[in-house]
Length: 104
Length: 328
Image (cartoon, rainbow over all chains, first blue to last red; front, top):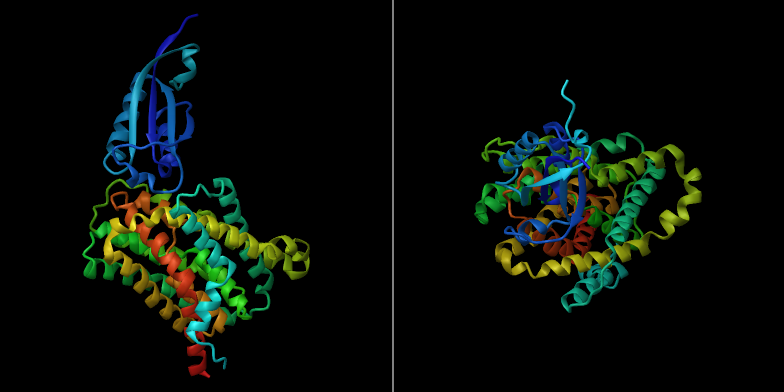
């Protein structure tokens, strides 16, 4: 089956950021995302996970330029202050046009 | 007047199921028990308690003439504005905390712990007093400025930055505490006591039991945090006890002066003395991410809440009795 190469952007963040992140994703051009809750610990350790609620992992499949925008936005806005990580993986999907916002 | 001494009040309070359930939670956690309520049950109980308080107040609010509301509203507003400033000043001047940390903690002490509010209602009821039905509305009036002033103090000088302030405001105003209390109040007032009667067995009859169960879990949560006391140091420990006493007595005095009954002044004092640990933390985390959550969560949950539950509320009640005696 014909596949298209796209980027999977994964953001793991403390729970208070969830709704803001979703707004950002929509704004930056993502067409969909999946959010799951999870537990864990990172370099900020207990400091951030002290707050009630589970961390969230936000996944979105987007085009290269949207992936760039998301990563640099998350890096600028959230990395300095909050417990957040973000990474990009190459993925191959079918129905590639589903993931790109139609250009008018 | 009753010859109730503080010692009697304290002893009676210690032997309430609320305090003992909380203590059991703390002790069990410290001993390493796996006791804990499922998160959804805990959330469900919180919803139930807040909504029940709102409904109950709403059903009785018609009995309170509007002109009786004015002065207490002013008192609540004043307390909401004063308490974070006092807390901030003490933290900065005596504790030498950084501006963001001081602002974050001040926001918690400016806002109101709904559970402390509910526990104070419980004690007042136990003593056969009744607090005015409109107190849930006063909670909202105190909560919003309390949080906003604390956050503003922390943000001033921290540079504007790119903070999600709209979402912070959303958290403050549309958090479930205020929605349930004010929504319940509105529904209770709209339907009136008579039409609320069919739901009374659930919302009033089961209330003390639900509160007991909720406090058991809160004890577990506070117990988990006790270990952090060493990390926050002696200053915050003293702060978490002395500042609530000052706020509490101020609240009782202002409340009595505004015409509240002994029960109402006690509850208002407990509200002023309390530090939020459910509604405030997400808003503070968003607005002041560089503040250390260990400070504010430990102070509010592991120090001030147990203090108020065990000793503070009886103290405010005693103060309210004392003031009432002087005023008549």
